[in-house]
Image 1 (cartoon, rainbow, N blue to C red):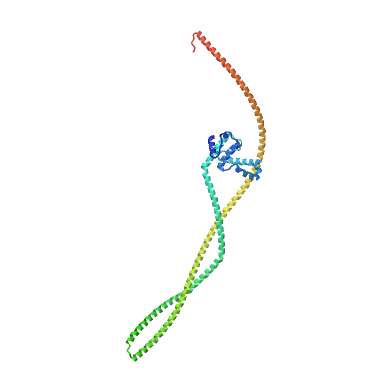
Image 2 (tube, rainbow, N blue to C red):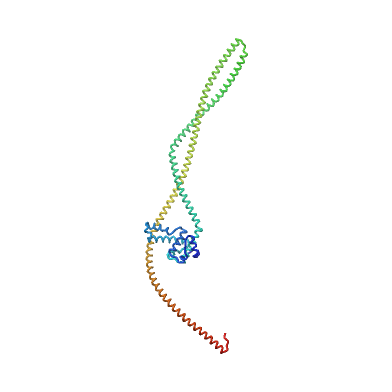
Length: 443
């Protein structure tokens, strides 16, 4: 036993077990029984590992393929359960630095050994509660958090895969429309380029016509001002006209010629005005066509911008899809690792079951051997009991003889003491008499 645990007092052991909710009497520690020792050791084991004797019954039943309630008292089930309990208690004892623990400490307990083991177990439990429990609790919390996170990631993966499938279906569904839009976009782009190319001479011609219109309007305003000036001058001249027929005739002929020239000019101007009005109407129509083209160009630009946004969204969705593919590959790798671990666990389980079967057969052989040894020991115990009864009878006879011998010795001793004191008194009287006769002083 390598542990450095000090031997605890019975009071400390009772108090420590009482802190765990176990009521233990001092008499049971002084005279331990197998049932009591097994119960207390299992309580110490449960404080650290959480394993009780009841928790081992189901695994033992599964290992032995016992499914009916009537088989619960099967000797194999009890033996395997005790074997599993001894195995876990041995591991627990090794962790508590007790290397010489065995089943003998459970089924043949002694006071000193039981107190020593309980001291080691209780100190180890307190050590784990003080130092190991925070670390174990942290690991348990982290394990629970990882399990929750794994479940969340699994559900999120399912949702993402569903979204990816929906997006792929939507993309496949929108692909013909996108192809039509691409073709239409290309046609509209070509049409825009052709419209721009055809628009340049029309715009230049419209600018020239606007300049010519401005010049004609200015010329019309000048002619109107000239007409007003001529009309004012005509009025002034009429006021100064001399009533002379010849002069009037000459003036009329001159004015007729001027009037004819003026009418001719007015006619020419009216023709030019009509031509200008026709050109203006044509320019208005061209302007309307240009505005329509500009509106169409704006619509085309909006469609191109929307198409560009859709292409950008499609590129982002492709990037997201690639990311999801990467995540899916990573999760598939994780799943493969988990599957491999599960396969290894199944292999280990198969190996463990095979070992359990081998141990079952070995335990059966050991049980048979132990049963035979037990029968032999029972016969030897009966013989020993018979011999012990004879020895006790002889011992009682010896004790009676010893008591008689002691009684006789005491009587003889009393008589000797009586003779000794009487002889001593006579000797003292003789010595005093002799001293008196010889005139000697006694000291």
